Structure formats: structure tokens, C-alpha cells
Length: 290
Length: 300
Image (tube, rainbow over all chains, first blue to last red; front, top):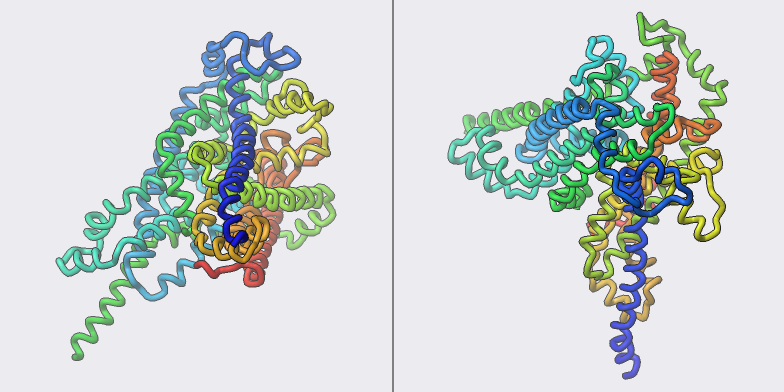
């Protein structure tokens, strides 16, 4: 009898203790995960004199907003911003179009060999997570595009987006498989063509997953460093990722300006994330195959 | 009878053609961006090629040169050092965070957002931030450590610490994996834990005998992805340390980049890329094959 009652009585206590430990761990982890961004913002707002102070101050004595102004004048911020947006916009367009169509072919039409052909898609996710530009394929791809005279153009960066991304194909296929096949059958009986079924029936239902793909593709392009580093050698074409490295090559690095510029690159991504958090989290669960 | 059979076959053929048509962009992309460069690495790897003019066939000379180049071996050593440290650490951190988030903490949405945030931020910008965060004199880390009387550490300038600093960058991405683990944790039926409680199992035993086995599919996924990312680690080392100090962060990807784009040794770089591909593919296959001995698929 006593053995039966005791677990019931101690359970709330145990749960409270577990919660406390979890909270402490999560708060500590959150502080750690926020520390780079905190230090970036604080440094971006410090004056040159305060930056040279030791020990460093944890909050600026006066907020020097003109650092942002100075930072954007140290390198051609607006033109690099334009290049980055150009790259991201076409990547989003290509990714949504191509991966929607490909995933449709892998999930909504039954044809012999379909599931067999899906194995290489999954396998390529595991080895080429950084797609399309990664250290394994960059040398031959660069030689190919250089031979075609396409270095110093955005084509080598944008073209791959129009030819499918294994991870996005996986994600969209996962989503489309959940749509009942009876919907397509009904439309087929009504005499709709495959293209009509795709655009009129499946497209509206797949919209949430397409938003996920658009967001991830846009953020990937914005965050891409290796691709622009290899293909964009003319400094007029630089993206923000390459522009930032300029601060590192200065004779005397001005860290407050470097961090102010970093802020300008990171803040848009963070805002997009905060506004569309639901979709990013949806992407995590779809991408893990759950 | 005959007519309807003919119709079925033609419908099958029609669907096959239609299916292939829809996936055709991927087929082109697969051959152009994956199959071609992987094969080309082995072809270019057998040539002397500066990036200009025509590649000149030299057989296995690049591979022999690599075999004798201590820097190539250093880069492999550094890369494996990084993978062996960063991948298990990533799994442990991610599981720890996921288990904590699963404890019915009310404000869990906040933690979820905060922990995922650095995964969305660009790695190049995170690397920039860490240059300053880890600055031996003016960085936040050493300042906080000084409160605990830890002497200043030259994170990026001391070969003993530099690799750890790069491993640290990778940990900022663990929040993303933690959310995948959290989804897996929530898929575990609660009645399994209730049954274990009735049998008198304590928390630790429940974790070892219920939670961990049911997380193994996610662990497998994380390890394979982690190995791929680890073997190809580039941006943090390129930005934070440029391979130094004393080549302590000269990873294989950086070695490929420098040879191809700074020393005009394109053939040699292709040879290394081919070797890196073989290492990556072999490890992925071996781990995938080993999964039958340690991964539990009962819930699927």
C-alpha cells in the first residue's frame, strides 16, 4: 500500500526538480548561443576609445550609432546588398519552381522505377549537404564554368537552383505524399491533364511547404560564402559575405566597424527567421522525415 | 479485352514518360553537379593543370606528390581531429538540449527560437563574431573566464586551442539538430515510461533503456550529416585562422582551396578532392551498414 502511494506523492517534487535543472541548463545554453550576437551588437555601438579599454565594458558607455554609417562607407555596402538580393531572389525562384516539379514527379505520379530513382536523391543529401558548391566538387565545377567563360557571372551560382536540390526534393516529396491520392484521381476522372492537376490541385495544398523551401533557399543564398568566393572575383560583383572579409584585410582592423557591418548582414536573416519561425520549424520536422 | 490491355500498357508508359519529364531537371542537375565533378576529380587528378591551357596527363604523379607532402597529411590529421571531436560533441549537446526542452518547461518556445537562431545566421558572420569574441585581450570569453581566474587564452593564435575554437563554431549549429531530437523525443509513446515506472526504474535507467534506443535513428542521421559537414569544413577556418597558426587549422578543404585557387595546382587539388570524396563516401557507407547493429527502428 505504501509503495503504491509514495511514487504519487514524490512525483510533483521530482518533476519540479527536473524542471529546475532543465531550466538552468536551457538558460545557460541560451546565454551561450546568444553571446556572439550580443558581443557583436555591443561592439558595433562602442567608440574607438572605449574599444581600446581594458577590461572590456559589457555595455557601451555611449551608443555610437554613426559606426553603422561609417561601416557602410568603408565598403560598397549598397551595391553588395543589391548583388546578394539578386543572387537570393533567383535562387528562391529556381528552387521553388524546380523542386516543386521534381518532387511532384517523385510523389504524385506512379511510374515504374520511381522509388528506386529516389535512392540517389537521398544518398546525395548525405554526402553533399552543402549543395551545389562544396569542397569536393568545387575544383572540376570551377574548371568547367571557367572553360565556358562564366566565372565572374552569377550563372554558376544561380543555375544549380533551377536543377533541383536533393534536400528540398526530399522535403517537398515528404509533404506531397501526405496529400490523399483520391484528390488527383478525382481531377483525372474530370479530364484534367497532369499539368492542370499539378497547378490547380496540388500547388495550393503544397503552399506551406513551398514557403519553407523559399525561406531556406533564400537564407542559404544570403549565407553562401564558398560559392561567391570562387565564382565572383570581380569586386563589383561581390556579395555581402565577401564584402565582410574586407574588414579583416584592413591594416588596423576596426572591430567596431567590422561588427557593425556584421550586424547589417545578420539582422535581416534574424528578422526573417523571427517573422517566419513557424515555417522554419516546420522545415526541421519535414526535413527529418518525421 | 485486347484493347483494354493495350490501354493499360500505354497508360504505364505514359506515366513513366511523364514522371521522367517532371524529374528531368534533377536528372540533369545530378549528372552535371554531382556525377560529373566526382568523376572529373579522378581524371583531373591524373593531370598537371594550372587552370590555364590544357591539362597534361601525368598519371599517378599527383598522388605520389601528396603522399610525400607532410602538409597533406597534416590536413588529413586536422580534419579527422575535428570530425572526431565535433561530431560526438554535437550529438551529446543536441540530445542534452532536447531532453531539457522536453521537460514540460513552460517557456520552451523561447528556448527553441534562441537555440535555433545561430543555425540560421551565416557561418561566415558567426566566424567574424568569434574572431572578436575570442580575442585574447578584448574578447568576452576571456573576460568572463578571468572572473574565474583563468589566465587569458590565445584561442586563435595558439595551435593547442585553435582547433577547439573551430569546433566551438560548429556547436552553434547544434540547436538545429536539437530540434530534430526534440521531435523524436515527442514521438516516444508515454506509456513506455509509465510501464518502466511501475517496474521501479529510475530516471537514468529509463533514459538508457527507453529514450536512447529510440533516438538511435536520429543519432545515425546526425552522425552521417555531421561527418559530411566535418570533413568539408571550410569557412570558419578560412575566415578565422586562414589555416594557421602553424597549420593547426589547415583542414583538407582549405588545402584543396589553396592549391586550386592560390597555387594554381588544379590537378593536385582535384586529386585531393577525389580522396576526400572516397573517405566521405566510405565512412557514410560503413556507418550506414553498421546501423543494423545499433539502430532501433521499432517505432518506425
